[in-house]
Length: 103
Image (tube, rainbow, N blue to C red; front, side):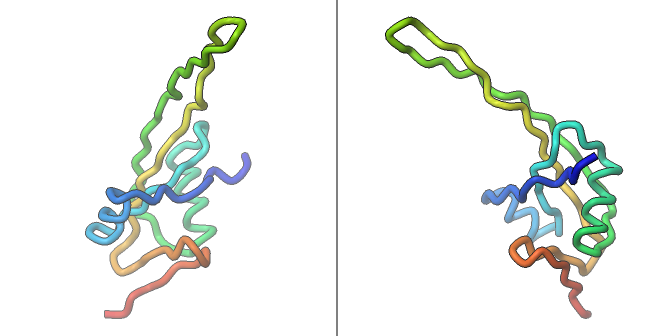
């Protein structure tokens, strides 16, 4: 299987989870399971993952009116993973490395 990690999901809520609870929110492949996500994060960032929660989202239906009538399409389904790291560890999305706080 290809790398299940697609990109970080940076919103106000996900940033709050990162600052308060040490949880990181990522967009992952829809066919990825929790163990695959955990292994990929531990391998890529060199951190220890304590838990992974996943949420599946169904793509929305979209309609477009044209001269010939109405065209109905669908956006892609996607999956979100909320990953909790061990105490004192963090991930820097921009450099692709992990940081361990001393203390």
